[in-house]
Image (tube, rainbow, N blue to C red):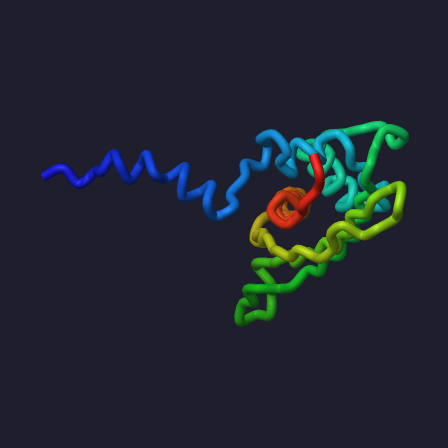
Length: 163
């Protein structure tokens, strides 16, 4: 028996339009409105450098003079032991990161969006010192990628800017 109904599939775009769905990168969408027009705050450590690098890849890198918006981002991370052996050795760590952000209009100074995103990554500490340090560095880089993706998703989904 054929369960697939083509009529339901053809009605999907109408249903999405009726609920206010708008493509992010479509005409007038938040993605196309923000791309290349956001000045991201300068990084002050390695982690914030990775975060800013990822944000500039997503939002488009632009010259400070030609931007309409300013995105201030502050990153904090903490490392927590997750797996401890009977001999009191930590074999796994989690890095919890929070990025607090504020998007404002450069001309008026009005805050258009603000909030924070939080996530975590982990790494193993069972190998050699070099393995552990490489794992930690990789986990921190992954965490900054996750935070930047979450931040841009929040901006795109909640921001209502004129085209």
